[in-house]
Image 1: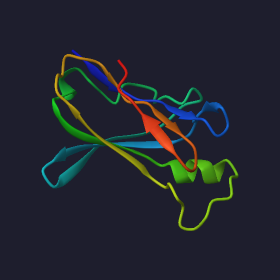
Image 2: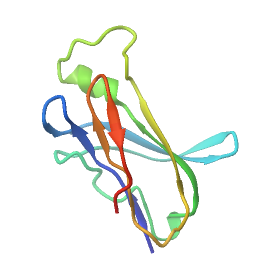
Image 3: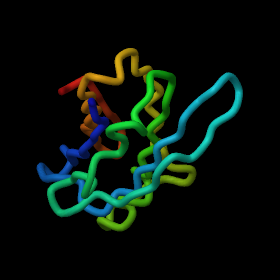
Image 4: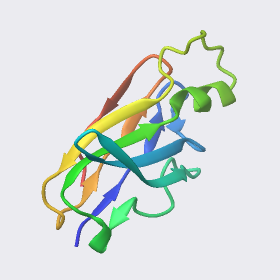
Length: 117
């Protein structure tokens, strides 16, 4: 069986994004269901897979990263409203037997993601 994981890299400071709140939602049509909420560890990763085994199903999902709160806690002066507050990555899982890794590379002004394994 496959698994879904993530990690956060803070490129503004050149380090892992530790203490970032991450929420995973399952999306079905117009409804979103919170599946899991976690904080990243000192390596910028969640302590365990977000989904794995029988819980990992093909479908549409969203990862929500609370980037604004993280950068504010780092002492960065942010405008009000924040340019990037919550970063939402909407993605689909086609094959529940594969591993999906969805990392976030971020600054207070930009972000990037890709599919890893």
